[in-house]
Length: 257
Image (tube, rainbow, N blue to C red; front, side, top):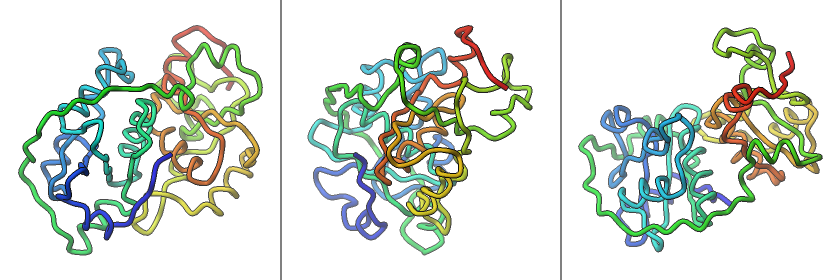
């Protein structure tokens, strides 16, 4: 499970042995300012040629090349709605890491508070990172065809869910899914996560209760990863379908509008 830490905690651990600060934003965003000691692992490095997440060996190599070893604790941070850190955290959990830390303050707030910002890339020292897969956090398209019981949470916009956009060649949603946009689970006031009580109320309004087993998805898995870590922190039994709607509609499975 991901551990959320304060900005002060991160400040105290920057440069400390055994910790690696990871910036999962784009390379351009990274060069526009980052935390001291932070290395860049953008989502693009974690994608395969089909645009979906890469194979475990590719994922582990991307983090290992950036300096994350088997005995190094990863500390992530993000900006805007936190989806980059959420996806990186989920991938690390999938690779078997149980020591993932995420800063609960967004980068914009860190900067507004006058905390230290650097601009040059940080040199990396590759380390060995052996993946030990934890499939319990992930759902595949085959799992959805055989599992019974989990509730499907579509975290795309209402327009996408209702098939009112032109981005999908088979618009709609996975049959039986309920909708709560990922933006409704993002934090406010400079925080990455929404308050658990408010999250519970919004999920309940969508038809999901704390006792449900939930599978979150979006179009490519990235937005849904924010729902995954938000619900995980609030005590829900949640998994991520990273193939998400793009894979589902391309597979020829039925869709609802």
